Each structure stands twice: as C-alpha cells, then as structure tokens.
Image 1 (cartoon, rainbow, N blue to C red):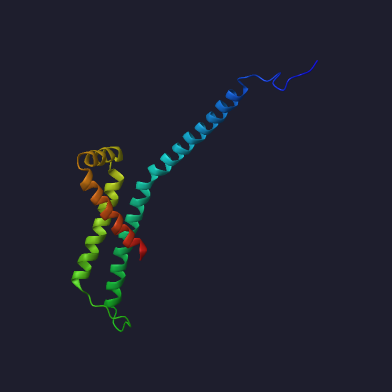
Image 2: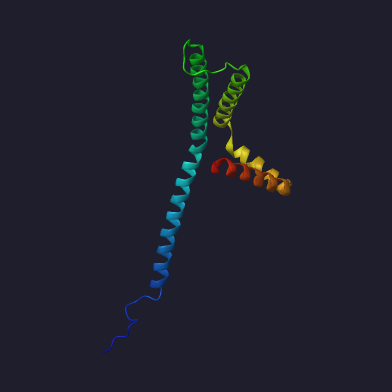
Length: 142
C-alpha cells in the first residue's frame, strides 16, 4: 500500500489558503484605510489650533514689544511704528479667521468643489497646483 504525495490533501486546499490570505490582507488594508481617514479628519482641527496659537503669539509679541518701548531707560529701542502694528493686527486677524473657517468648513463640500474645478478647468488647476507647490517648497526650504 503505497501512498501518493497528494493523498489526503484537498485540491481546494491551496485555494482556501489563498482566500484566507487575501481576506487577511483585505482586512488589514480596510483597517489601515479607516485609521488614515480618522487621522485625516483631525487635521483641520490641528491646523486651526496652530493658527489660533500663532495669532495669539503675534498679539502677545506686539503687546510686549510696545510695553518694552514704553519703558524708560530700556536697552531695547523700538520705534512704535503704526504700520508694523497694523500689519501684525491684520496678520493675526487673518490667522484667526482662517482658523474659524477651518473649524466651520464642510470638507466634503470643499472636496466636491475642487473636483468640479479640476474637471472643468484641468490646465488652470494644474498651474495653480504647480504654483502652490513651488511656493510651499520655497517656504519650507528656508
């Protein structure tokens, strides 16, 4: 009684093993995708927090700088320039309003609007993306 090597092994065993492996990979991909989606949903709040903190820091710096310049006998001589104050206030207000917009924005509506623009004006969208990428790259390089 000789036994062949294939005896006792189901012909579908290889298919079953492959299906289980694919199910595992598929499950891992789905869990990874949901994890990424959760993290991406917190990005606007993080950006808004950063913008608000930056605006508050600008306001505090402006107040401390004006207090130092008002102190008699100070070693730091700062000209109380109204144009610098105006620019600082404008920048801080812009950062604050951007933070509020990020908190209130409907990202799905924004996404659909961007998709519509790209479909209707692909060349212009590409040029805007290239320009924005160039400016961001220049800013981050410094």
